[in-house]
Amino acid sequence: MKNEFIVLIFILSLFLILIENNIVGYSIALALTSITFRNLKWVDRGIGYLLSALAIYALAFAIDFYVGPKEYLHIDIPVVDVLAPVVEEVIFRGLPFLVLPRWAALIFSTAVFALLHPFPLLAFLYAIALTLAYLGGGLASSIVLHTANNVIWTLIYLHLL
Image 1 (cartoon, helix red, strand yellow):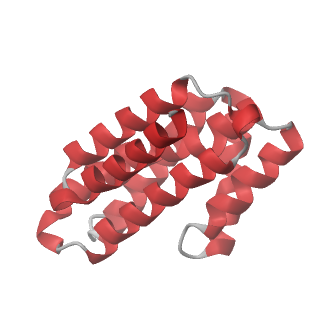
Image 2: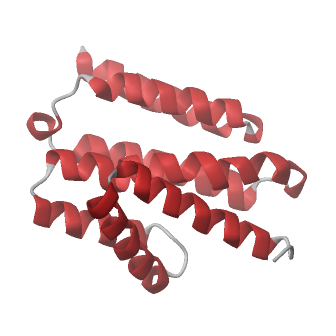
């Protein structure tokens, strides 16, 4: 029964993310995912749940951001600059270092982050910096660095910097 509930939450989360390019959808999906996964024992269940959640989030976000109409840019910017760094840092640093051996978390947090971003080599180097920030100052530190980076790239994209 628990597995069916998790699949239902994944499907509902994907639907909420895709509806009308809506930041509310992202927020509800994130809340549902965190409620669902709060009580799971990751080590017992395997890394599959983490990878499934990551794949759904990455796919929905890519479809929404890269294919969505540009008139929704005012909604996409807060998502890219605020929500995405928080979610990605929890997925790529917070959870892996909580449930995996340190060496496996290091590999996962850098390699998978790089593979899911444009320009994988640059993203790999950036993932190393984010991981060092996480190891040195905790999750808040990597979230602040990630958010600052995304804001700078957004300003460059909008020709404001």
